[in-house]
Length: 353
Length: 128
Image (cartoon, rainbow over all chains, first blue to last red):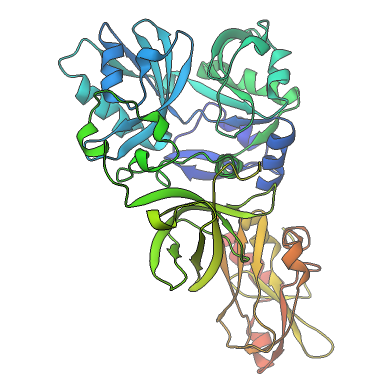
């Protein structure tokens, strides 16, 4: 297994380490997933997400290239800002969901899921053939630390010179933490305010140490998953796959009306199923792969993710269901260990009503 | 990792304790709760259910997964720990005491002796 530059820190903190996307990553630390989830919702948590992939796309045709290769429109991205985006395939599905940051007129940094590093890099290289675009896999050149929670901005603001209150959501700023250069991006995957900190691998431990000393609770991938689910964010490989059309989800806004790779297969298609949020009514936890049934026990969908929220103690999840059952308020049943358990369709986020 | 000497154990990480009235109380070991992580949900058997040794008798769900719990002995379920419905994390906090799962009226007392003692169970943990 691969290790991030922060591996030693995870060991020192007594993390339970698991394999994820080929990396040895902390599932949780001594406090456990519930405690970490709550720390992010009430204060500040710090996550090692250095396993994520970074790809630099640059050159005179970089903007036009990314406008074609992705669903959102990087031509509209201002300098120093990022946006949520997805990489379409040729059959109406997506290869990955990503963040794209504009670092220059013709220079972008694409941040992709660790598990999709190879497919994303290979695909971008292939599409870049014959264009004045350079695609460089910079994954090993970056460590990434996420600081998330209502206190995250305040915590980081005290460690850097620039006034972080001036940085808007999706904006970036260069600074120094503990004498070490970092780029802070006001983005995150938890539904809370916070920053993601891009730092050179050799400097990662220094940044981690000072953030933890300042009061952030170390959090692992377990809490990262419960937080993003509760906040209503999709996870590639669950809500989004090579076969799911983002136009059939609440993230359809990412898909801009412009020419893009695979548009033929994606645009203007009828959605047989839609991605919905579900909340269990009966006592059970929905899990990926569980069938979703109607009141006559016909299969009308499948759960893509599920968990029990450490915050609300409700069992929540996502499911792809036939459009006839996709309206919020619809009654559905999730088949849990052979028994139909009642659920209701809700519009995420789950923890704010 | 606690493995009390006065209990018996199954390889699948359940413990059993013979009470004075002849019933056998069952739970999961400290090792098992540590492996599971935060327990968020427990599905217990119905009182009155008859189980055979090795049957799946309960399910414990942690944040990430669901784990089957097996009957270490055959018998009839006479009591279940309903407190776990509102506080499933009790299993993590007190796996051998307050975190007990259910108790059985055993149909074969001999099966108790077939279970591993603390030392034998401890060795299985070392084998990994």
